Image (cartoon, rainbow, N blue to C red; front, top):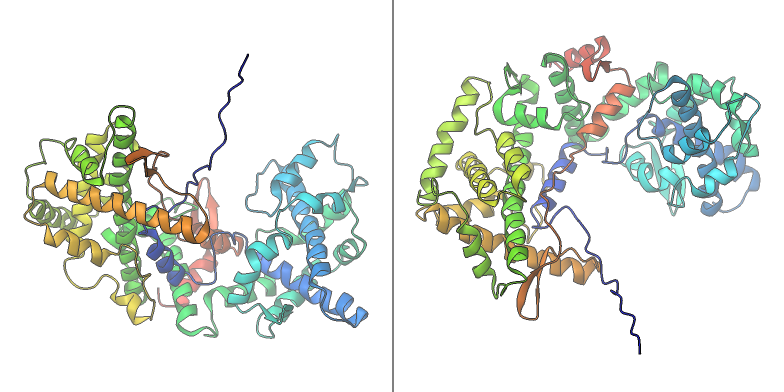
Length: 534
């Protein structure tokens, strides 16, 4: 008798970003620093476009039907609208050889264009077919990405699922986009759900997502910078983060990256825009950069602990087919044995003291040193899977550096003043400082064993909670049959605190300009900095 055997497909692990519960507070912190903008709202003109559609729907459909707001029909029609404006932008990019990013449905539109044998003006674009599969969410990019952000920015408002516009920003934006597209056949295309290549070419001449000008640009700047102080402290924090990006673009030789994450962190921690360029924080932004400094430390704490967890998970995997580990403490001891002999007998508190001297130097001379937080993180992440000893030694230096920076005062003080609450049950900088201070007289090997055990137990607790409450399986290591097994490799993550999206919006509004592969400040951007005394 022949027997056919096969592997069954079990529950697949989910990568996830927060394996230790450290990054939950990071997310709260950057949400506090750049409110209203999200990690998926990449193009500022969608706010105008969606405002136009909401107003068109209210005037041409809801009023004519004189019935209860039909949100199902609204979602169906806005998908057609997003295909019109998105395909128009893709045609422009396709014909100019540009790959413009972050347009909802861009991959679907690009594929259709590549399948065409030339783009004749008379060619019909299959809007209804494209609308069926360009985006998974039933409400399109508006429903999934921009709706909540537009409401937070005071552009749209909802009342019992009825989508409307605010008189402060929503209606003026809709009117401005109407003026811009006057002379095109946008309304006709939306109403009839048909479009040709020629119609879309004409539309994109005025509707491109870049180089927004005129009244529409002015209104969008009022929204983002909260120039009328509509949103109080929330609007001020968003404004200050945008001003910080502009200030860095002004003072950085050659310009900033499209995602200026590292430049913001370096400016906050070291007072520099690059390894050799000092950055003098504008006086109105000093307190705001202090908040970014605390965010930076939270990010580096997360990285350091995740590196320890990564090596621990690899160690579990290496022993899994031998006798395995019966306990977390056994894993921690095995990991600690890998640390470099150059550091293992040094007192942890002494390593922290040495870090104080190291981080003082760059503040006097902005040139980067070999104990720079970013440099330490990058070196450890690069070898975390193939050189555990080097990764651990580098991670210990990174964690010592973070500890030395939080000795004086509460790193969350500025956030607490703004009434931002930390997440309970999540590792914070203060938790780490207490943990570190209690073990200051341990040698680095013993301290590392304690830190690895803490990280691994925390991961097991966090992964268990996610499984119970969200049904998502995120274990990297887990107990099976009384022993620890490796479930999946652990890769240190990196939060993206909305700086990329903010920079793209500033670029779309003409406040930043591309200079080869970097962004430099424009005359309009300098004017705004001057307006706010920056």
